[in-house]
Amino acid sequence: MSAVTEHPNARRMREAAEAVGRGDIPAFLEHFPADVIWYWPADRTEDRIYHGREGLMRFFGRLGERSKGTMRPQVVDALASEQHVVIFLRVTATRDAERLDTQVAHFATVGSNGFARNWFLPSDLAAWNRFFG
Image (tube, rainbow, N blue to C red; front, side, top):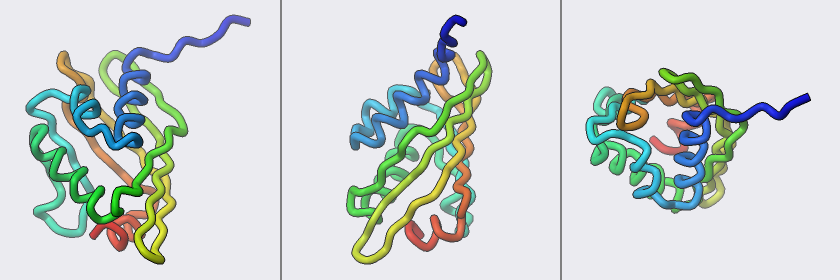
C-alpha cells in the first residue's frame, strides 16, 4: 500500500495554524492575500467580518490579549482541493481560572495569493464568546 500525500493547500493551512500556535502572526499572514476576508460568527455585528491583513491582525491581537497569549490551536485534520480547504483544530486557552477547550472548523477558498475568503466556526460558540467576548 502506498502512502497518501497531503494536498499542498492542506499543508499550507496546517503551516498557517502552526504559526499561530507559535505566536508568529507575520508567518501566519503570509498565507493570506492582502484583501483577505475573515468571517466570524460573533455576537456583535462589528466583530463578524474582518477585512485585509490588518483586520486579521486585529482579530488575532484580540484573541492573544484575551487569552494572555495562551491560545494554542492544535491541528486535528486538514482536507483540501485546488479551490477549497478545511482544517479542524482543537483550540485551548486559559485566563486566570477560566479555560477554553473547543473544536474549531476553519473553511477557506483558495485564491492565487492564498486563502482568500475564510469562515471560522467553533463547535461551542457560546463558550468561545464567553472566553473571548
